[in-house]
Figure 1: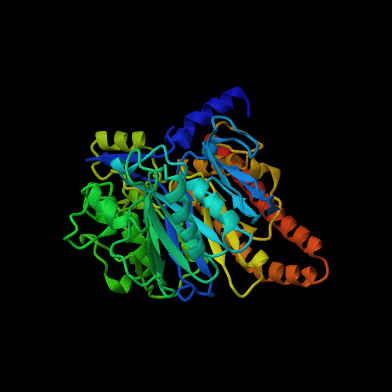
Figure 2: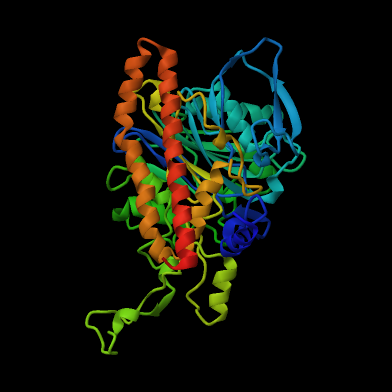
Length: 543
C-alpha cells in the first residue's frame, strides 16, 4: 500500500484505535467497572451435543499473538517465574516492559496449553474464559504477586479439572497474594463448568477473597464485567469460597454480619451504570435470548446466576451471541439512522406502492465510533446514543471452547478462535492436541500495521465493511458463516482420521491435526485479504 493509500485508509477506518488504554472503564463512587469482555457458559445437558462450553471475548488492546507451550518435566528444585506485563508483548519471546513479580516452586510435570493473552485451554480439556469485574478500588493490592492471566497460566499447566483449578487458585492467592482488580473466570472441564469471582483483601494485604459456583448441567450462564454471584451455598459440590470471606467483609465494613450476605453487593457494589444490580444489558440480553419463556425483567435488582434455556444451545449459538449487536431490537444502533427511501418514487416522480418512506442508511453500522455518534447527536438526532454491544470492534480475539468427554482429549477439546470483531471475523479451530501454530499467529498486530501479523488480515476487511455496512455485510457475513459451517461440517472427518492414524503412529496423527489447523487458518486469511481488496475497490471506485 503506497503512502497516499495508507493515509486514506487510516482516515477511513480510524476506528482501528478506539482506545489507547488496556481497558475502558466507568468510575462511580469508588467502583471501577470495565466495559469489556463477555463469557457465556453452557452445561453439558444444556448443549445440543453434550459439550461443556465456556467462552471469552478479549475486548481490549491486549496482545493478539498466541502460542502452544509444550508439556515439560521439571526437577525438584525448579521454580516458575510470575510476571506482569506479558499482555502487551509482541511475540512469545518478547519481554519488553515485562517485570518479575516473584517465583514459586514448580511442579514435577506441566501440561501443554494454548497461551493467549488470557491463557485458555490445556491438553487435558481444561478451558477458561475471563471477564474483568473490578468492583471496589479499595480492595486492590498491587503488591500481590498474581495478576489474573498468570493464575490462568499456572492452573492450566498444573490442573485437569475445573474444581481442581479453583482450589489451586485459592491456595495460590492465599499464599502469594492477589494483585489485580476484581476478576471473573469461567472454568470448564469435559464434565462441568464453574464461575469464580476473585477480589483483593485491600491495600497492603497479601491474600484475596473469592467465591465459585458450579453452573447446573442443564443451565447456561453469562458474565460480562459485573459480579454475578449472589448467595453462597454450603453444598461444596456446587459452591466453594475462601475461608476468609466473611471476616474480610466485616473488617472492611462492607457487611455488618446481620443482613443476608450477598457476594456481589459486598465486594462489587453494582454495575457500571451506578445501579445496584448484578447485570447490565449484555447479561440480560443473552439470558433473555436463551430463555425467553422466563420473561426476565431488566428492572429487577438481581438476575439469576444461571437459567435453563428454552432449547439446547450449540457452540454455533454461542458464537452468534458473542457476535451480537442487538439486531432486531430497539437497542440496535445501526437501525436508528434513517434516510429517505430513494425507491419511494419512480423516475417520473410518482409514488411507488408498498415502499416505506425511509430506510436504514447503508452507511449506518452497529459499531460507530464515539465521535461519529456525537456528530449525529449534535445535529439533532437524539436516537444516536451508544449502547455497549456484545461484539465490539476493539476486540483483540475471542474464544468459544468446546469440551467433549466422549472423545480423546487431543480432539475432544477445541478452542474456536476469532481475531478482531467477533461479529465480523471467521473462526478457526485449535485442538487440545495441536502442538504447533502458524507463524503469523505468533505475532501481535496491536502495535502497528504488520502484514506478518494475522490480526491485520481480518481487521482491514472488517473495518472497511463498516463503511457501507448495509451493503458490504451481504458479502462479509456469508463468508464468516461459511467458515463456521465448514468447521463443524468437517469435525467428524478430522476426529475419525486422527483416531485411526493415532492407533498406529501418534506423531503422524499429530502432524495431521497441526496441518488441518494451519490449512483452515490459512484459508480464512486468503478470504479476508480478498474481501479487503473488494471493499477497498468498491469504496473508492464505486464498482
